[in-house]
Length: 401
Image 1 (cartoon, rainbow, N blue to C red):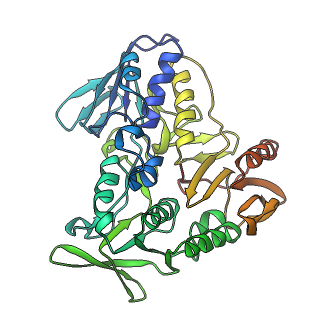
Image 2: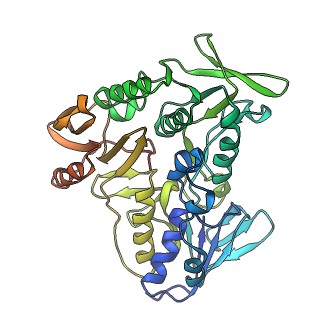
Image 3: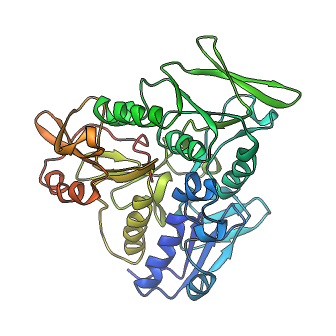
């Protein structure tokens, strides 16, 4: 199989850039274009809810590569021009500005779009946190905010609440789960997270879904819970997760179902591939389709996509992995932790804030989690590699960094 004359990568964030870099690293010298919806050069997203939001980093520090490294790729960057349509048969991408970009191979790496609450676009003071501009807009409002409400008790919501609290804001975290990340980690870890947030001054209002927003004169004044309680707020952060950015693929000819459907080689159609948060592919090792939302997956999957574009025949079978930092807790998870698995501490002590937990289902290990013990958790990862495939379906609920 000969290398394609031109490759178009739709999405200029972590997965898109990693695909381009992997192609060049593997010797590809053909035409290479990266199309990005945002005007910014490729940047890293995990720092947005932490270092960038707190002001510890200026935006430039979150860039994935310096300008010299991007120039060395010998690639065309088309930024600030979102893709609006794909003709998979013709391998042509249409953009918002009217461009039509054609290629012999196309990689879809458009990532995610933040979910929102009804009516939030009409109220000042309501934010999502997905892009660099989102982080900077929220950062500009936090210093003057007396009451911050974070809507969403998943990874992003918990991280944002921790950062805002460390900035000295009065923070309330609201969501339907009994504890932060309960559906992902189960009670052993989520209850420890709840205790950590409470100890640091976050007001947890969990166990009730959010019904909507209250406002006055065009600005948010509170968050309404389904119980009828109203949480007063000067600033609201909506962290209700994100959906794969696939709207532009309507009538493209591709299969789309909570992500771009791909085979085990991350191929969505002849000459069309997907990588990163937007890709749902067949994981041969797990025997099901998988979509992972994390930074590590974006890089690793991009490498496999690049290899397959250049003629290899490589399935992508990673061990799922992500991490999250909240206050002084650094949590690293390998595999698939879940609330319905049996979890137990195998090293350290949860009371001391340093431990490793192993998750088991039907007697076999499905995940290893380290709380301030990353090395020890990584060493126990081998227990996952020795386990037989788990037929349980996976989804984008495995969100993280």
